[in-house]
Image (cartoon, rainbow, N blue to C red; front, top):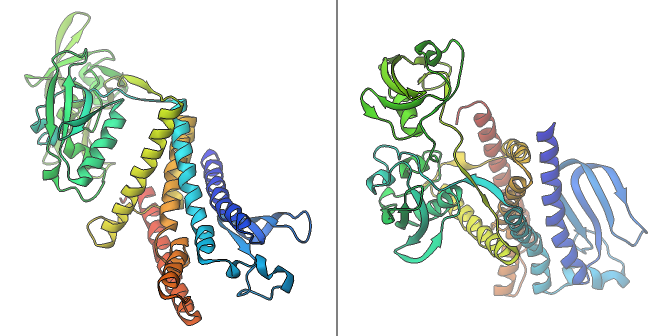
Length: 455
């Protein structure tokens, strides 16, 4: 129920803001607005103060909205109202009215990101776990327990790293641009400062996928190699492991942190069978040697080795919060970064350099909306900002039936001095409807595949 409500609230806010942008600029340009509708289909709520005022409607199907304006192309207009018709307005005014919807979504995103920054969120401290073997971070000499303090491209304009989440975002942006990144690193106490270089350009990143952070080596935050809850009857329990045991070595190799220990467990699976390992653990100032043989978990694909116990405590968290002006500036910066990233990903999907599996539909949005609500207000505001950016950017694409398509019509009119012909408009609208239907079908199929664990 929380997921459904969060999804409906998300859609409601984004649709209202988008259509409000069209509505306010239309009114400012002297256009009469006949109807402001949130949702389609049968009206479940309606309000109109007088026959000459705008009719506000909530439709039964809350998957969009529209603002209907007085327009001679859509019906007869009384002579005394012709100066209020949309089609009678100047090219600049019509373009401003159309662009106002996406602009309102982008402005909302700035405010939402700023709000999340003002409230503050708990994020993992930028202390690294053991980088994956052969990753960029491992080649750069980074190791478990390194604390990343600052980052820079080419050693210029060093920026502070507020959290591991912040670091991942900046590194992802740099990887997509093909830039190498320099990091100022120290130990967990801030000592032993040095500079490490992440050679990201060599990765040739074209797509943001779940494996990217692992290939870079920033997949997880540092956590000590201490056992958490041990499930009764599982391999860890049968081996004699207990919560609080500190793992020192596995098969004679020192264990730096929980990530390294998890890799050891996963690596115990060979040719479909799990081999036994010798663990040295510290318990109550004593060192014990235990034989641990993981089970083969066939309920996941591909099968993996499991010991049925939590490995490592939660990572150290930091409160990331910004002041009023700084939060607003970061909100604008994040909106710009997400907008450009969205456009780059769409472009790469179009030319086949990125997977179409990156497209998400209403089921994924609903799932993430529910998750973000459970995490707290700041996380929900950040999620809402992300979707608002996506809605704003997508509506600016030059596709018929979208705001960007109408702007392309106006660009043609501005260049040639004449509007697009009615015949062309009809063909373009049909083509645009077909493209949108295909995109919606693909996004929905991706949603279903994710829910079924196929992606």
